[in-house]
Structures are given as structure tokens and as C-alpha cells.
Amino acid sequence: MQQGETMTYVAKKQPLPEKDQASIIAACDDDTDRLLVLVLLDTGLRLPEWSEIRPKNLQDAFLKVGARTLALTARTKRLLAARFGNGESRMPLRNRAAEYRLQMIAGRAGIKTKVTPDVLRRTFARNAVQGGMDPSTLRAHLNTSVEATARLFMTYDRGGGRS
Image (cartoon, rainbow, N blue to C red; front, side, top):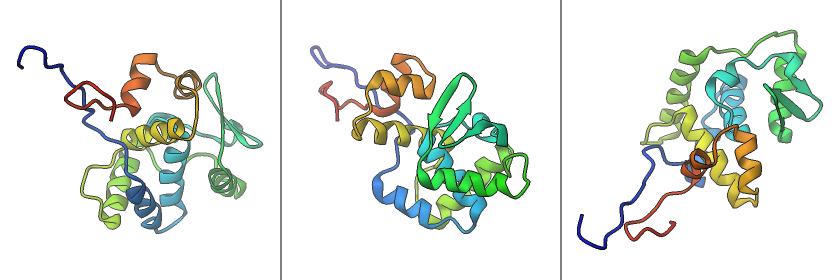
């Protein structure tokens, strides 16, 4: 690094661009695919939190996760209500199976970069900030530190400015 040049931070796992978000949703073949992709994309949950959702966690248009209460989008509420409304008591996939399934969906969508639950979490964070969510609200929603929240949705160019 030359004198006067600033270090840059670029997250290894970048959020999905809008076109890839649409592609991965369109590549969902069934309700299990849609449940996996949309719940992660619409809530920013971590994969272990996703796999631990039970019917008791649903409260009208909200999802109770630990000490947090998260608002659900209409599409996510519909999918979760359908899942648990037919007598199911847990999510359809455990963590490893969900990660594998997400890779299969991304492959069908033609997405060349690796899509992980964390990438969908970062995508949620970026979309929330672009939609006007206050960073402190986002931090509480994601249950993470201020620094970690910033890394979720900000990247820096070589000059040190936001991009």
C-alpha cells in the first residue's frame, strides 16, 4: 500500500443484485424452496433461527425469534401459515439440507456466485437500508452489533468512500 492510500473493506459475501433476487425466487420449484428462500430473504434470519421456527413462533403478522419480534411480509406470512396450518410442527429442512437446497435453487436460477443463507441475510440488510430502515432498527432486527451490521450492507471502494 502506498502512502496516503486507504485500506478498503469488501465483504467476501456480497448481497444479491436485484436481478439475482428475482431469479432465485423464480427458480423455486415448490413450497419448500419458496419457504427457504423467502423467509431468509424477507426476514434476515440466520439459518439456525430458520430451522428452529415452530408454529408457536407465529403471532399474527409477526415472527417471534428469541427476544425479537419480526414483522413478516404478506408472502412470508402466507407461506409460514400454510406450512404450519396443515399440522406440520417444524420447518421442512435442517441446516445442512437447507444449505444444499439453496445451492440447488441458485444453480437453477443461473447465479454463478455462491449463494448462502448469509448472502440472503446481507441482501435483506441492504434492501432494508435502501428501503429506509434506520440502522439502529436494522441492528436490533438482525440481533447484531453496530459494526457487524455496517459490514452486512456496506462496501468500500479503494478511495475509502461508500459504494
